[in-house]
Amino acid sequence: MKKYLLTLTTCLISLATLAQTFEFRVLANKGVNKLQKSDNSAPTFLRTGIKMNEGDALIVGTNAYIGLMHKSGQTLEIKNMGNVTVADLQSRLAKSDNTASNRYAKAVLTKSTTGSQDVNGNYREAVHRSNSTAITLMIPQTVQVFNPDVVLRWNSVGDQAYYIISVKNIFDEEIYSAETEKTHLNINLNDENLANEELITVKVIVKDNPELFSPSYGIERLPSEEQARIQNELDAVKAEIPYDSPLSKLILASFFEENNLILDAIKQYEDIIEGSPEIEDFQVLYGEFLINNGLSKL
Image (cartoon, rainbow, N blue to C red):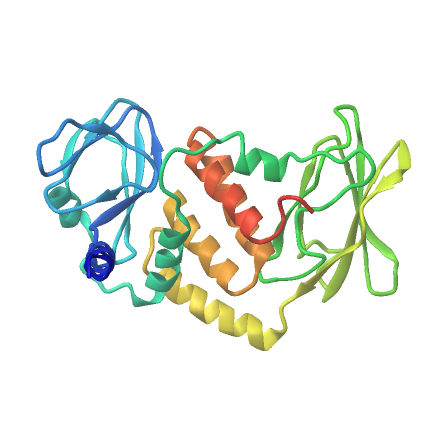
């Protein structure tokens, strides 16, 4: 009998835990910031993934950045020093019902992790991996793309390496090439040499050692009907979020990922990192995205 009572108690506790909700969740945190819980216990240092409930308050330090997402999917950025209560945060929320962006915002919530993160782990392991015998691009072998701006990134084969990026059409004719000492390159598919191509292949070669090269990767523009569908949905999402915010770009990255547009999602993450390099939590989220999509240890 005791066994069954224990099992029942465990189930009730589990159900109670599942029933618990939250008002805000921390997506990104920079600086010495703390959380004051409603029970007036001693403040604790803020961490990514922490949930805030009614009556809680943030204690924001100097030169801080806190990225929050409300349970509705709306985002807020906190930068000013001082105390901010959950009630204060709720009053800053837009009154509109963000039905178009909620799905993708909540996907960001489910992917954000709790607890402290080893920044030297996920992101740097995924982006700066090294391979002495071959080059691997950080994209799927074949991929469709919506936006013309594309970021290509690959593993390093040495500090002194110089890379040639070769782009070919379906007839195996080289239509674009570039050289760089970096392990990444931005290309625009609306470039005059690429604008009329529906499908291209990309290959990276070490300039002074042609035996070190990548496989060919196929990049295909979305068909016109699918392009129109994505554009309509994207317009609806953008209408509900402040586009210039890093948190908004996280939502857009989630939108592209859920539509299997991995290169477009990568571009959003790259823009976030470039615009906010000091916020390490964004690097962690990028690393988790790469791992979840099988791009960390190709």
